[in-house]
Image (tube, rainbow, N blue to C red; front, side, top):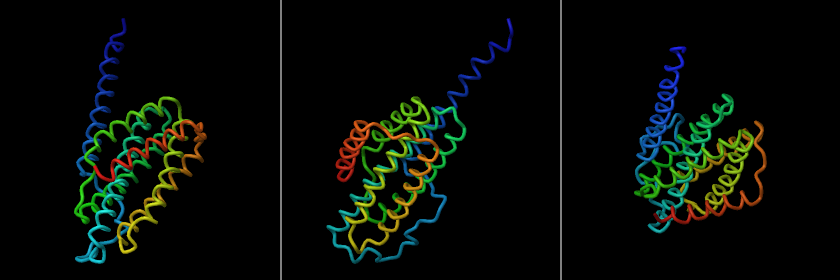
Length: 224
């Protein structure tokens, strides 16, 4: 019997264990707010009295909307890392990891803005992260075409959601608006990239289910 055959099993197990530990560590960083942006905040540097023009009600509303956006980025980070973990294609994995890295920028900007508004992230973020990561694993297991199609449809719905927030945010909240505008541009780029790399259109019932799930999440995250 070849001795190397015995060594292969623990090596594979070690690789899986390392990957699991890495993902758990990444999830804890996301949920704790310890992530750091690689790009400057599009809102620029904060100034004292920058939000003085907003009424208390506008401030609470802006905080609710930005908390919803933060939840969306938590989910996107988990989703793409789950998909990347399942694909066997190095190019697809690189694409997903690049998108996840840009979502980290969004998370860091949103964390900063929530702090400025005196607000906190959603208390249900661990639930959202776990659910999105599981969904990413499932989508990635089906195959790259469906996985990238799922990415494209996710970003399409996020674009529409962010566009609605640009209309709904208080007119005087320029800092939140600048952040959301940059996020929208990035998400559009993710969608186009996924489509160009072979993402297929998802069936109508799947798209409808994604919209319904997003509605539950956004409604809950605005308050909790």
